[in-house]
Length: 332
Ligand code: 13P
Image: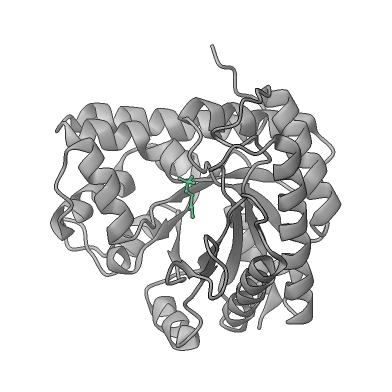
């Protein structure tokens, strides 16, 4: 492990005014989103859509990195240039999702554990040959009656730590993503409690596996009331709860923090990221690594074959999230 390389990658990803586009949807997730937009989810359509995302002018001002899926890293632009190269040439760092998805956790109904450790060392070595400098692994924690269990939190934390160790061994910066889902009718207080327990367990496991915190980026969910909860919270309240929770459970010396949008509306995700940055007092840069809250309008217009509007809407979403990452977003 060369910590200097990891720190360099982290610093570039966490550059001011910038964040990450998550374009690492599996073919299955893509199918759901394409079909909802009325577009058949063929391999070629996925290539064409990703080509639009990677070639739109101006995005390099707002994006430091893009997370790719295994299929995409092997695909090329119409000019025959590999997608990781298309991005690198624009100064955008290509990354790769390396987990194999969340599977049912044995003996624990309704809970998931993320798989994908088998053969990961060899896969990372191959991804490096494509110019990949960082990776992502997503764990999923569901809030419900009597869940999450300690078994679920610890199984996921342990897998995240083993993944992070393998990445660091290969000089690939690990993005560690324990997502506490928005699904459910839980309160913001319950979200706070579960997020805190999840983050504490995750960093405790990372330490046990001797993962260097300085070479880790946390990708976190925000502390929010459940999607079906009656509780209404302002962005300021969400921003404060999120920063407080992270300050209590995340080591000060990790490289930085990025947030997922997690099924919030585009505007909510941006307003909440802005409020998180305005809350102040966090020792890390707090930026975005959104999929849906960047791509939603672009996918809709692209599926309607309006490429110009798709590009415009996409640049608008990355630009507003860039402003939010500095606490300078204004809804008007
Ligand atoms: P969303 O922003 O759509 O939650 O996706 C982010 C992500 O990468 C989930 O793993």
